[in-house]
Structures are given as structure tokens and as C-alpha cells.
Amino acid sequence: MMKTRPTRFAEIFFLTLALTFSPLLAGPAEAARISLIRDAEIENTIETYATPLFKAAGLDAEAVRVHIVRDSSLNAFVAGGMNLFLNTGLLLAAETPGQIIGVIAHETGHIVGGHLARTEEALRGASTLAILSYVLGAAVVAAGSGAGAGAVILGSQGVAQQTMLNYTRTQERAADQFAVTVLDRTHQSAEGLARFLEVLSNQEALLSLRQDPYLRTHPLTIERITFIRHHVETSPYSANKPPAEWVAKFKRMQGKLFGFLKPAAQTFARYPESDRSVEARYARAVAHFRRGDLDAGLAEIDSLLAKSPDDPYFHELKGQMLFENGHVAEAVAPYRRAVALAPDVPLLRAGLAQALIETGKDEALAEAASNLEAAVRRDPRMPRAWRLLAIAYGRTGKPGASALASAEFTFRVGRYGDAVAFAKRALKHLPAGSPGALRAEDVQSAAKLALQKRHEEG
Image (tube, rainbow, N blue to C red; front, side, top):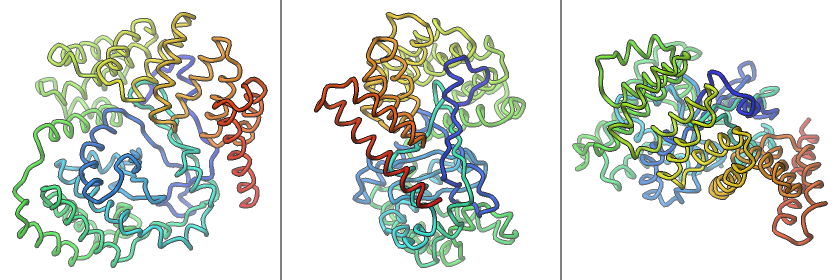
């Protein structure tokens, strides 16, 4: 998640991306930045909620990218067709998993309805490079270490107008209708969606500038609330509750987010020592860690591991605590355990690899590279993993592979000129016609095209 005392290598992965991608829901005067969070556990929780909905909607669940926006306002939106954004404010304000699920179902309706595709003219009014570079993976979240550092993407010159993602009332009704349909298909209640809209309706009397962005971009009418509430009253699935496992994931997600995003004093007030629930101990572990009390943080996380020794995310947090407090060698074991328990989670492998590289031991580099190769195969849009892979290859005498990894990294953070240079360097070392050389040519071509578009759009 976030850093308290970053070590030398960790520090370089906090990137200010020089990208013309503004916060999509801000007007020109507000187009300053949008901050995204990568966290393996939170992403897993959202995936658990969203996958049944995507499948029931006829979508390829793996093709829809879910992004967590570090923003305290209630908001969710889709962009670029298959990208769903959820604000941390929404995740923390939700009272039940059903409210998050209801919002995801509604946004899925916008995706299936092609509502954003119908704003093509508005998209052309924004920066094509700004949108496409993000959507196609040229600037997906950079990261710090462990469970998911944030990446900041700067906007320049307000390239995306607020109206770009504004939906019409007709589109909102269509998305609502699709939401209740897909909830029925998955035998889930629409009560969460109804409750969420009712909470938002209480804000309609506020001045528009004080409303949450969700209200400004998703027109809310009494007819919408009436429609959802009527469906709740008539659907055979309205009494269905989310599985207990989903509720537990929801509580853990909120505890973890609260610990990382709120001041420690607020965390301890919400989750006092007397609260021995998993989510409370989790939140306190994070809060102790963030304020620099490593011993107290480790005591909390060790108490959780004593009860759940096979939980990969508890091991991950322990590794992060140790790593970011300078105990690099000790961090390797919990990171290794996390990867062993969840080998298909790229962020965990990247965290282990960074700890291995930071030990400074040559014998650790092969293991680091192996983990990073597995990570980028599963999720190639991870700048941090490519940067680490370039380091690992460089230190093991593989200049061509190192240059190619650097080309991948620089392309994904919008440094297209550097990407061209690194790709050319890679081609000097890689055998002609090899998979690596062909990939270097692809990156070089894509980077040159991006530079051309950037120049055309000023």
C-alpha cells in the first residue's frame, strides 16, 4: 500500500508519471492528479464480487480491468470501454458488500450498453494519447513495494472534460435495468444498490460542486430509486445475503484501507484494542506500522498468523513491514511464504523479487528474475516489475534482456523517447528474429507512434 520509510530501491518506484492523463471526473481547473492504488488482497476481493457479474453479463471477466482510485469521494466510473474505477471513498463508505456489488452491477450495465462508446466525439475532444496510453497499458499503475503502493498520474491542461463521462438519464435507467437483471441472474439481491442510491439521494439538495462526483456524472432521479426499490420488493432473490466469506473479505478490505489511508488515531478509535476481530487487528497492525511502531505492528500481524498461518496477505504485510523498516533479509521469508500460498498473484511475486534484489546477494538474483518473469507474464502492465526485471537482468550479465525490460518499463510510464532508445539498445544484443528482438521492435514502433501522437496533440 503506502510507504513510511522507503529504502533505497523502493524509493525509485514511486513515480510521478509524466503523462497527459487527467482525472477524468474533474473539470479543467481541477485536472491535477488521479492516484491509483495496487493491492493484491483488495483487488482479489473486488474480483470476487465482480467476476460473477461480468460472466453473467457475457463479458470476459479477465478482460475487464478494475482500478482502485485513492479518493475519499463516493464515486465509480468506467473508461476506455473495459476499465472499471472504484474510489476508496466508496469502498470505505459502503455498509455491506451488497452496496459495492450493486454499484459494480450498474457500471457493468454501462460497459455492456456501450455508453462510453457513444461519447466518441467527446473522446476526440480530449487527448487521444492520454486516454489510449492508459487504456492500452502504457501507463498502468506504478507501484512501491509489498501490498500495493500508490502511483500518481499527473494531468496536464485539463485534457478530459467533465462531460466526457457524464451519462444521460436514459443511459442511467438502462444501466439500472441491466444491473437488476444481472443481479437476478447471479441470484443476488438488489437491496445494496437501492440503499446506495438512497444514501446518494440525501445529497441532491447540496450545491453541485459539493456533491460527490457520482452524483455529478450519474443523474439521480426519484424514478430510478423507485424502480430499484420496486425490483427489490418483487425479486425472488431479495432476501439472499452475500456469502459469509464475502462479508469477511469486505470487513478485512475496509480495515486494511482504513489503516493505510486514515491517521493512526482515527484507526485506533474505530478499531480499539478491545476489538479482537480479524479486521480490527489487521487495521491496528497497519496503523502501528505506518506510525513507525514496528514491534506493535508485528505483534498484531503475528497474532493473526497464529490463527491463520496459510493466509498469504498476512505474510505479505509482515514482509512489507520488515522490508520498509530496513530488515530486508528477514522480509524474504514471509514474502516467499506469501508467494507459495498464492503463486498466481503477480503483486506478491514482485514484492518478493524486490526484497531479494535489495539483499544485494548475487545468488538471489535468479530467484528474483524468475518471480518477475512469472509476474509480467500474468500482468504485463506492471511498471515496477519491469524496472526490477531490468535490474536483475543487468546484474546477471544479460544486457539485451535488461534493455528490453527497461524499454517495457519506460513505455508504460509514458517516457516514450527513452523506450525507443532502450528498444534500440536491446536490438543490438538480442539475436535477430528471436522473441525478444521481435518484442523490442514492437515496443519501438509503439513508442514512436505515441511520440508522434503526442507531438500532433501538442
